[in-house]
Length: 391
Ligand SMILES: [Ca+2]
Image (cartoon, rainbow, N blue to C red; front, side):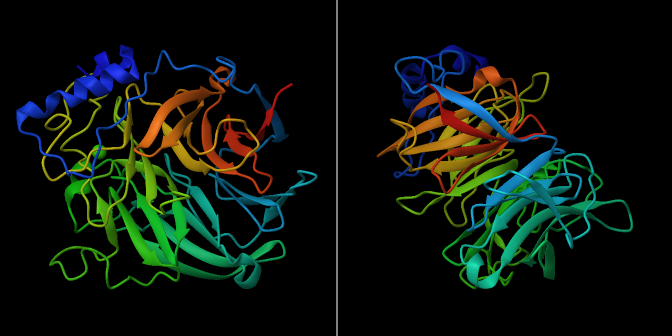
């Protein structure tokens, strides 16, 4: 059944889903049916009068860049998975290595992952990092620290959060970071132990909400619940690696990798269960059902899902005016289908999907909007690129 979705047009998919509630599914009344973009019939940006785009490589030779963040002066910080943090000059694109980065271990999908610059960086100098750490038994977990950037060095390192427990598996570490309204949001994947995504005594398969100094807000949804970890904000995620704040309504949107098929875009609600592994639009690698189908009472539906998977990297909202017709959009980077998915935003959430740069053939790990309103991305495991309007 899931493969059927991939050849249907979006309108037909929505119609097919709308006919399903006969089987006793109840949905929160504020939750519209998910959107399933048609993977094969999507139009590249060159079609239908859309602006022509061209890629400009600003810096090459990066070693598996994972996350990036703009500094107020227009320079960029970029993490490399092996454990180095680099600053790219926003004018000359010269690359400088930053010292004092906390020790990480590159293990499987882990290593140095996201970097985040505090909105008040000009006053406080805080830079946040997520990365993989190991214990004495060759087990791994995801840690978040912050430090002040002083010249070319990180100083005053503070460890804020370490996901529990540690595992020998070396996959699904998360871990995207977001600061919004004084809170720090941290995503952590299921670490390859999918049942943990439904257990509130583990940080795996969760999104956490902390204060920006790592303290736990007393109004988090599971504070006071016996056996639950108080940092948890939402649960039932598989491997969330994209996160951004909606520019108009302030909601937090998260993308996550599904199994084979079933990548998702979810809108976070405090305490909500996003279903993994009880429900998914995907299946086991090589085929085989997971869980109980696509709907289950008590779990929230994604806003968007992709079959086949695009390999969701990061997510960014676009509100600038550089690219005609884009405002407002959500941009989702793809690691498998090597493209950027632009989702037009509308009053219901999202409308049509447009595939951008699908002809590049490069994995897109991170997308960010620069201070110039242009789209920047980490591509091909080695490059910082900028997307310009073509002529
Ligand atoms: Ca889900």
